[in-house]
Length: 412
Image (cartoon, rainbow, N blue to C red):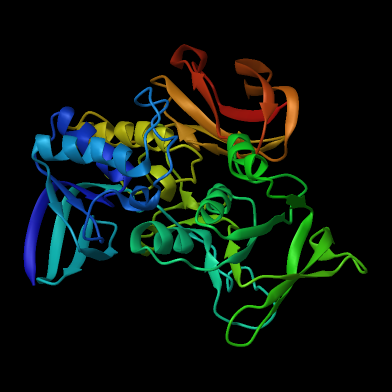
């Protein structure tokens, strides 16, 4: 087995990994290795041929491949070493990585690691989809890959379960390819995707969205012939509301899960609310020198925010290697309270400004996000519209954290 040593290893060549690598090099780290399991860099962006990426980061609407290419060009210009077609099999708490490629196995000892593995989709098995198992059932991302990258049409008459952003985008994509999208069904009483995607991908194409409704049965032997849908009450079908909908394709857009198997294998402390790592304001995990960013940390709605967050993680990883950061002796914990599903980071040093990211538990209007240290106000952000699909970011100044004990975040 080959033995290698690198100052900084970044796992994942999608938008998070690319941004982290570029930022680390610009911060002064010369010895960087970027590992990607695919044969090309860019990650999921390569199959996202619609535009709308980069509005915050670059001030223009780019397609996914265009957005990725901006960073790939930067990585190449900076001369950052990459290993493509390489899978990281394991990582331990001493930052020892075992990797596999067609060239064989290798062991890499890293001075610091940035985890940027992204996320995966929930499948039919993950949601215990009832009924038979015919062909014609895909996750929305798998269908996107078939159509956009492999030029394979997955069906002609489709139903979409779940109103996540990928499902909404695929409703439009299927329609543009000549398929008939019968409807989108969402078990929750509100849509899970961004409002702009509801408008641009459903309303603009007269595709109905049925809230509080889900698929209760799948029909077909060799190929899907239809699904039974019903209205739901507390996630249970309402008797008498069942109806059959003919279709040959069912796309699942029922949630994303951070790819944290490597993290768990290294005994990184996890946060149950995000399914990602527990991190501080430098994006360092419970293992010194191991940082996490992007969708492997928490699922984002905008790739621009992924890149921004990952750039900070790459910079902090570089500073760690130089001895510029260490774990706080008495960190300040941050906890979600009324109306807040999760917060990130989960603890901070109080020695620097940081951006607090959070998601709310349900849609509301004309509310404010409060950050308090006991009875003392640390920050407040007034919002016209709050929605679980849209991540909220609140800037916190370090001078507000002096002598703080525990921060609590709530919607009021």
